Image (cartoon, rainbow, N blue to C red; front, side):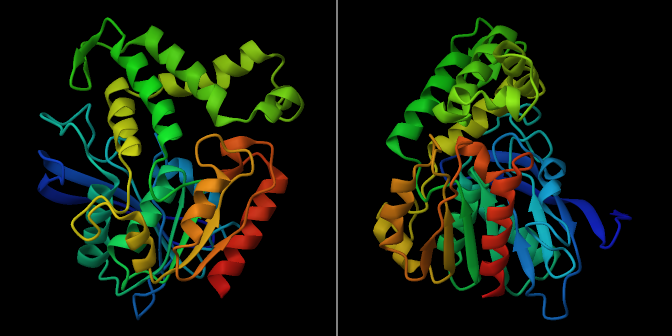
Length: 342
């Protein structure tokens, strides 16, 4: 399906993958990979930017970043946004019988590779770009397909989920499991509304920095009258739009993310990082509580062609998706466009 869009073509589609075995055991029955593409694929089929989704996001939510004056320019690049498994658009835990206990980032990226090569006939990826869980997938692209990916842009993400990050995710998972509606194996008899509210409040304490709250930016920058309103309207209502089983499944994907956890690298992260031939731009937020600058600094020493550009922001993790943060958006746009030009 093709829809009109001012200045560039826009396509939406679904790739039918059949019964898709996943690397940690199990099969996604009748797997479907939804996607959206912006721009025009060139004759050489090598102007592709793959832009995977972050936690809970779908392709519509990521589209704000794309535009002639945006971070990613669809008049120059063919930008493909694949929907991550369990985001409610591609095959998800809520709508797939016997959905596997764990679907990894590598499973997602291998399905995305089929989309680019089998459906679009892409010959090369000019860049893998991603924020948060999307950044982890961009890192996986560079590690799993080193001869196919020219650049990787990792915004507020890491090559392997850190121990501290796993503790945060464990808290979210245990909160969902504590719900009376929880059946086990990531399944629920009904939506656990009280647990989802608790889930949202936990997330709010991590998604933004201590400095953000100290400066009361939820009032001065976001226009909320008080903290309670901010927590309800920006966090509770947002997570209430998601199904608990999908939140659970994607949190497991995030928790187990590791570019080296495969037969290519046998858990050797340094080896996996060194195998990346793409030019890698690492863009952590100075105050991110999930993906610390120190984690990217540790990765940088093993990359052949890497650069670190820390976003100087007090907006925590949100600095990497700065739709409502003008200064951070300017910083992100400038560095990404420069990296794509080089």
